[in-house]
Image (tube, rainbow, N blue to C red):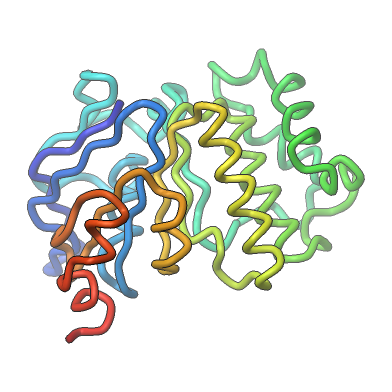
Length: 234
């Protein structure tokens, strides 16, 4: 469904990604792992069109989208759920979900999308008229994922969905991610939580200082000493 070939990304003089190659098959759950500042969020922002590529190409269903705008990518179904959730705090849960479906391809299906989110997250269904800023962190993460679904995600990219959540909410959020995957949604999961990601992902990539240093199945990545090095610097 998606692949990148030889992608570099820079912030001024700093190269945040170097010669990155990655592919995601339709229906896969692919984990992107690494320590802080490894380049995980940068790679996701490249895929979203937020950060331009300095070199290399990005393809979605064999179409070269390297120069495509972020808006165009969302319309194609490439949807990011950002780190830290970034809900609109002064807007209601319902309004946040409606905002997710503002793009041209999702707009006609917003009501259907919101109904699906309410079925998936009953707690949101009970709080549709509540300001998003009054929700707990776990509820805001539900809302952020729901907003991505209403946007018509065909490739849902989750950036650190467990960040700042209680163990109970982390368990619940990952159960939902697993359900979405089993229902056929293609997912790219960016996480620091190694064990959780390896438990659910079909395949994983490990980033270290902007380089993809390991790729393979969950077992291959778990057993590779370079994974330990990328996380612990050993």
